[in-house]
Image (cartoon, rainbow, N blue to C red; front, side, top):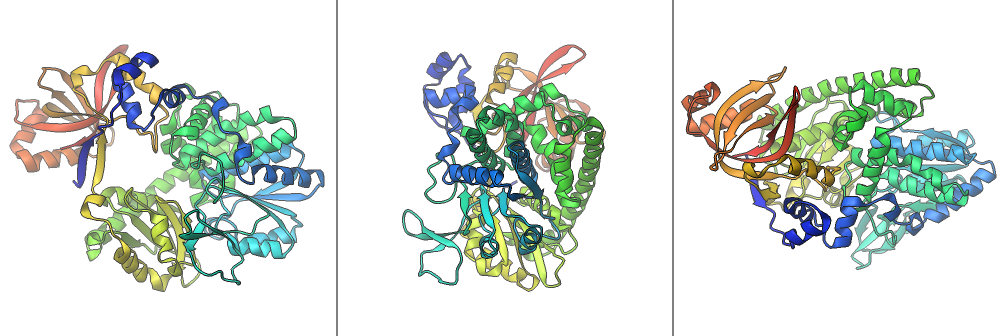
Length: 603
């Protein structure tokens, strides 16, 4: 277990914060651990509303894009939205399509086929648009890297408006290349040259010189900000609020950091989702047997979101978009059932690919690499990112999964990273390997010749400067809290910290030297270990571990021996003690409420 446990040691006047905001000092400590400092920031974190969102007019190109769209609508020009096949892209496309339709536009949409088209704009999509008389292409959740494609569109007389949130391409400062169609903008310190597409308008908070103060918006949020400005010009700005449920869903689904504006967008979006009148959302929520009133970010990230993504992976993302655009409950129910079935199939394919990958890694020298590049030629390319994420979790290393593409000599892949390794920047260092690539510090997608896969593995590892300590999973404990401190009131109060997710993880507590009194394996699939634990103060409590019970039992057997573990399973006195990290919860059963903890890490 390559883990290092740390206790967050950030300091503040926790009693004073607790008194001013009417919260427990433990809650105040957790808020400080999320780097929320100062009464104004704490108040926004706890109670922020959409009135506190930044003015979308601060987005570089935002008002220009809205004005240009309004001109095109009034002139009756044909507009085509080109989105992406994931959660963010589908929701972005929905927002723009609904909004432009509301404003009277002649508008349609195209979502690239993951297998046939790949990510984002490509020449074939633009040729089709030209053949069909499209005047204006409006991208969402893509376009920032489509330099050659947008240059082609401009050469053929099209108007192009890009809305995106991905990192712009860059290179080390050097002499200008006259053959490069990109707009070249130096970084503030002069060490980089950003290469931007030659679009008529570019809206992306991450582009250089954009004054928008919050840079972590997802693609749907950027698209929505443009819609807010368009609606402002059309004097219907208040109607833009209806799209917050789609913005919030995309923010969680695209694993954006849940701080600042994103936190407000998700909170407001969840409020709308719990009372949604959208036929598609209602059908998908019901198909997954979820309760509207208790929907939270977990359900978006791990239940509903994967259903939306599944159509883009195994079928076409247009099916997910049709779900959101469904005109009646019957159509929505049919589509929701199809998406759930696709997601079930995706789960099976994923597990088979993960098993094969681990067998390959463990049976070769690849397990010693600091950066894993796993070639799975038969893996469905649409699940490469999920498989990479699972392998990263198992080995604690940045992981690229490469699969065969349709073209005879081409491979495609996806990567998932760890905090110590900026995947996008490391790929930039060897960008000559790739025919196409893009992404974030934590995730990336790419294509390259199959003949260069081994070279990719070699060069990424040669360039890697991570140490063993960098690669150790860092477990950050918010509060070392004895279990006898847990109270129902505290557990209920922790809900004010929601929504949980990337950048605002569930609080993590810990106690050392807990005695294990008994253990039972539960669940239809024997995937829950139920422990009875006691601390030195004599407090006993149930502790649940969701996952593979053998992970704990085998670990205990190695340390204490089979006999002691057998005593534990029989509920007899034994010598076993463990340190646990946990999250407290309340178990409700037949009208009784009891406190329990959910185990996250053990040692």
